[in-house]
Length: 357
Image 1 (cartoon, rainbow, N blue to C red):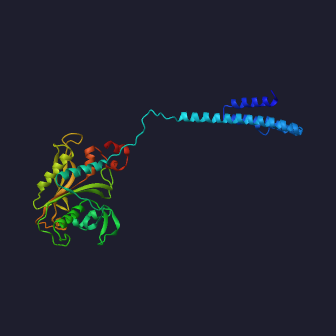
Image 2 (image 1 turned 120 degrees about the horizontal axis):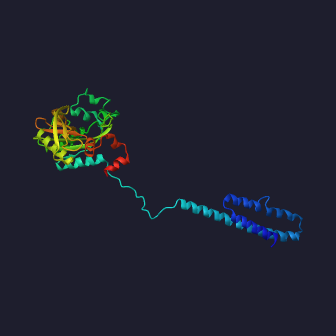
């Protein structure tokens, strides 16, 4: 075996034994580096004759290629081993079921609104919707709220810049009661062709009863455990020639018992005051059992529609009479599901909302 064969064998042995890439580079330097053993042999060719240079140079090049081949093979082997270890560390157990995308569900307040609409729909009530940016006239004046009423204060109502096309102040509606007047106007135009309900003279001719609920978002400057700057309301109106307070009690009692699925539920109509109804009553409920048993809980305001509001609807209050009510779907949701903080519904916490799927 020549000296070059011995050198190649030694190089291959050391390169194949290198356990890491760093040690492989150290072994390479011993043979192919600037001061490596093969490099030193090439430097000694200067003293050889031309014929010897050709022979010796070819032999050294062959040895260099053999060493570089061993070096490349060991580098690839180390890279493959590193990749395999990496893959093992991040291995996936394909026998496990995949993580599926969760299915969404309706918000609990939306479920309540749909339930309210279904119950009143079964009683013959239409569902009305309208603008959330409302004029001062529909929000207050049409509902018998005088100009100095506290509700018109900017500390209670969100007013916005600008005015309506007819020059009236604009606000984020503080209740859905304006829809009672809007719906009445549309109802009259539909059944009394050519009559303008805002012309001044009320309509006193025949007209089908107005039965409507108006659920939707409302806004007030208020925020605590039972109030939110944005909340939901549902107004109801039944207006006709022979509608009485007794009809209000029958309709709302039936609604509450159906909504809470409890025929033993007790209702109390407590005298109160609202500018848009006369007489007026707060509606309280009492559960016969459960954690709220024995407590009176306020759920709505109600009353006979005030004559001034009937006039603003474009109707003759001497002929048309009826009742209105307003309730908070958010509060009904709290009572139905046993939630004690209104803000939880609007925090967007999936852990909380997923309970209602």
